[in-house]
Image 1 (cartoon, one colour):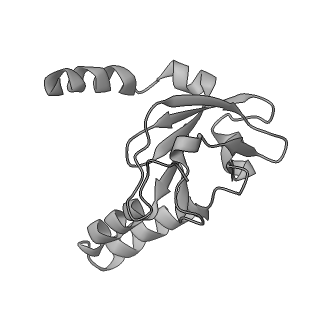
Image 2: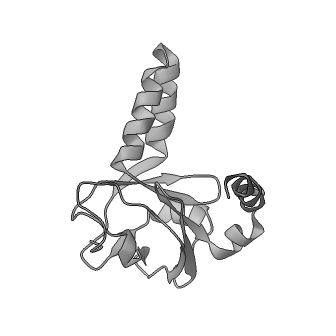
Length: 149
């Protein structure tokens, strides 16, 4: 756990880091992002990357989906569950990636993964996928942030 992160608060994930994916599909998580022993973390499969979220983000999804009715609520929860899995950071500070999901988003053992802080969680990208930025998300974020600064 980071010395600066109180155990009763959700961590904040900042900065970008590059770490290799080892032969067992594990990637080392930066020490600043490690918090509360045995903390509940969830890993989600997106089209081109993986997202790691704390329990608070799952609770936010549950609150949102509670407002849906009947089969819509069932459908969205089924979709979320089929693309989300529980995970944890081991005692050596590594996160094991689901192999099939990692391969689907272009991650490879022995290659670098890019861990991108996204405040409430963090993303795991294959470097070439992130660099391609097919959705223009990086540029859009910079433009929107100009309104904040």
